Image: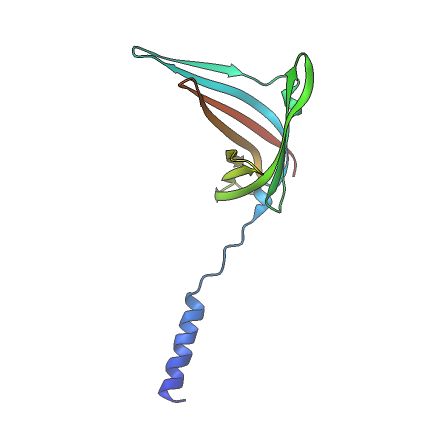
Length: 161
């Protein structure tokens, strides 16, 4: 083997070894069907002299019908129920895509983006340390109205893995 051939094979081997494989995303830790467990609003009122925080629990016998289905193909469907004039009805049905930004020991951090909309949910999944299986997902729905700070939070519990 000549010196040129040796150097060629050495450089080729180093290039192949140094290239990283694409990370395979494992969706098993979040894929499943979830039901609404908790729904609340936190509002902060600020004046020049004081700050007051108000917590409102929004979960009731109607909102517990709300659901979230997270699919392994990177899509989701979210259905929300609310009481409207004493009747429990679907008030929104959202479809979109989700992406994982971080996952560590069952704690999922990601985004759920609604199709044909600028609407995005920041999501945090909590799971079992040993299996990495998500058991619940929190959606933070932050917004501002009339200069007051408002945060809505929905927590979904996984019922079908």
